[in-house]
Length: 385
Ligand code: NDP
Picture 1 (spheres, rainbow, N blue to C red):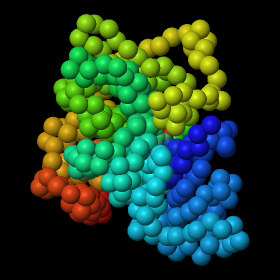
Picture 2 (picture 1 turned 30 degrees about the vertical axis):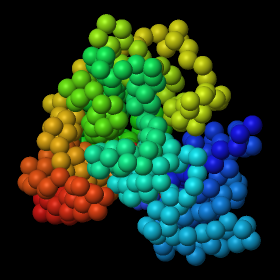
Picture 3 (picture 1 turned 90 degrees about the vertical axis):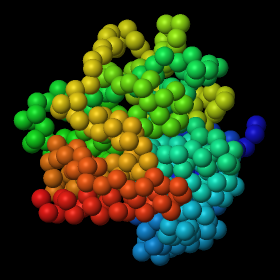
């Protein structure tokens, strides 16, 4: 049996935990190089000990003493800060799982790409923000991006063995989130606790809010645009409340290929871990007779303008997707902190997008600068309201 080495950026999060759950079932197949977290030092140390990682990195430098103490005597190296995250990502490993949430994951993801690694990409915000800067880095280094996001993983599977030139449509499915059937009045009163209670998926707080606002689907549209070179006009979104079909590719001959599976991220993660092979997962087989019906409807961009904003930002190109992502991160955090209502998130993003248009970024530093300025503008708008 070949032993493969792996690093997991964002090991303490929802995607990180699901990945580690799969590794736990095949411990002899994996050698864990680096695990990282933001503030969860004790959980990180626990995981590093369990998986005998070489290195544990905590982004928040103030937590380094806790991490060191919790790892004392283990022989596992501990480090902290943004530079240490980048170094962890760049360490030799057969596979790097990029599962930090938000643009905070950009620099480490780019570091793994620069080394030509195979990267399992969950951190969609990094690709949305960096766009061509990241795809150019992939082309330069020969890195391989394997999509972890269930929709993109589905599309990746449906495209296998086919030419992008033969694609008529790529259809991303969306559950519609917890507020799918809510009226505009109900939406105005929605709470963070209601937003993070997703009907089908168990995810981190930020992506749950994005799912509730449909920004998640809009970000995924931009992500798909970068991952699959068929053109923005061939990408569309359909609401599919059961989350059984994870996305579809329709070809010019009228054939549509779809990938189906349970709403469990361990399925797409397993596909990335085993690629180009397959591995077992503990997920229950799909019982379509019990599910009974698969239904579909068009997205409602009146109640959920996020998908329109994301499409427009992609059409505008340049720095606009990075501006959109940064404004959404700030506004989503503002909603989670109880500062603004959920419907204000799209309104703030639209305001930030309409008030300035920075030059297209040509490097990672440019993207980081655009991101920082857009955050300042979004915060200033929220504070002045
Ligand atoms: P979580 O919030 O559950 O976990 C985020 C992880 O990133 C944690 O390990 C966290 O550490 C770490 N982290 C957070 N902020 C920083 C920071 N500033 N610097 C360094 N590390 C940080 O998120 P998810 O697992 O839900 O999502 C991760 C990514 O995967 C997101 O981009 C999301 O869009 C994407 N994704 C998630 C899916 C899901 O089902 N959850 C599905 C598809 C995509 P700590 O624990 O210390 O805070």
